[in-house]
Length: 336
Image 1 (cartoon, rainbow, N blue to C red):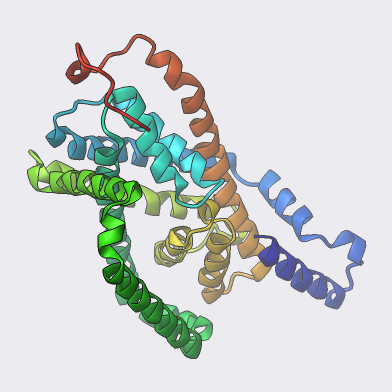
Image 2 (spheres, rainbow, N blue to C red; image 1 turned 120 degrees about the horizontal axis):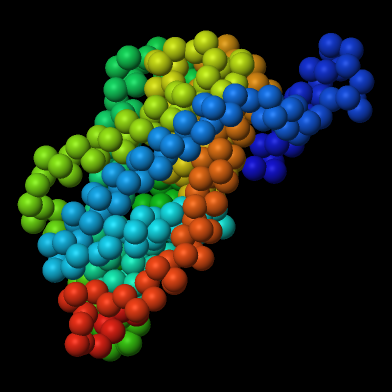
């Protein structure tokens, strides 16, 4: 994020110099703050509302994966766990999935490995969903997207990374088989096997869904809300307010992959790819950076951080004296 801001600010100051604006009156951070202050807050509130609607569907879908394991978690615990997970991701990339599993396992007395298995399914479906949306965007805006990707893509670097990754994988597999017998006797190996068994059990729940059509509807709703909140955010900012739904789709896809990249909540990577997408359609670099900051702050700070903190504070009180039905007259089996 710092590197992106530094390069953007440098370019912004160079443009100010060409326009005859003094350096002391030309700061990208000041522009972002001014743009955010002048944004249409009605549309930003709508963005937060759609984000929370998506999380209601995400919670319902997640619980559909958990029920075949024999558990009936509270809806509020599932929603709170998801929001805490989003909040945790702002600190350490992907730690949110672990936090989410730990929170639900703690309050619902479920083995954390089984919960993680259902989260793996949840994330696999998300990856498939963003691939489908990406294909849709490619079909509708192929020339524009390919032009941007071609400018960014460094084929030689990708080949080098691929070769290095393949060599590292082969060495790892060879070392595992060479020392397998010794590894099998260690406690850490046995713990990993136990965790993997829990994952497999969680993954198997997708075959035991009682209402697959409802699961599909929730999946569609999650991604429809994601697209709409991205598009409605256009209306909150003057330079993007007249962009079309197709531009919203392309920006959504680029930004979505920016969040998939393991940075804290998509910090930096989201902003960069959103700038690339908006640049395709003639939005200036400073304006696209402002839009990315407005969208990011609204969703990640205005929703994820605030609702995550609220969940973190309230869940202990909500669950005071709560005992899940399956755990009554049994010992606590969770170990978050």
